[in-house]
Length: 216
Image 1 (cartoon, rainbow, N blue to C red):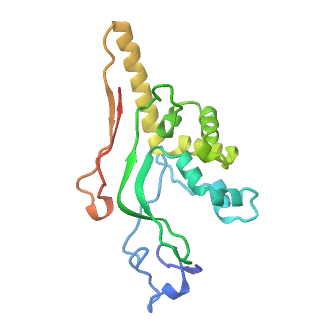
Image 2: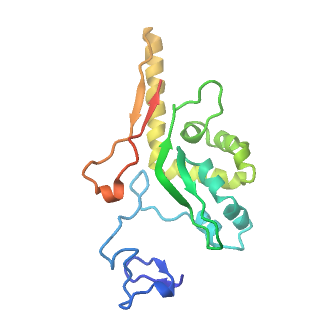
Image 3: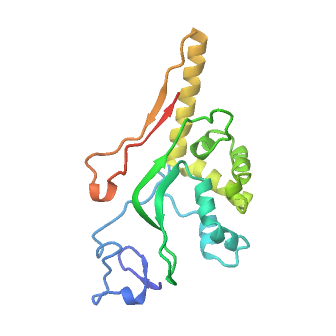
């Protein structure tokens, strides 16, 4: 994939190049322009060097481990559990991840309940070091490198907007609990609702279902 789109700089195979040299599949000949990604503070967000090195540098000592277990790393640092039907087409073709039907993301209380270990978004409202220890001790992550998990966790806490959202939810919940206990009142239900812009193009932003996070 060494043929570069002149508009969006995407990488393409030589056989994909149109007769006029202008690619359609990536940006429709420059008509589609994506906004620059930004972090929670609206700073321009560049691709993290340590992740880029893990993905592209075979000389990195963690390169093979990261590639062999990349889905475990992705799941370990996710904010929600993804559920879908994965389709497996047999054959000698290069692997691609395929799903059939709906894709759902399930989240839960902001704190773990019934003595269960924190998971997904719950790991982002506790100490970073403790969160990484919990992740690496999970059976599904037994082959993951604790140092890589720690780096990704700290990266998300610094730049991911969802981290700030969950952190604020935890602060609101703690304040409500303290005030209710002091007043001798029942603790109110604290909800976080994920909204969507109904004016967005449904061809790009059509949701599978409405999602919310509820705290009782």
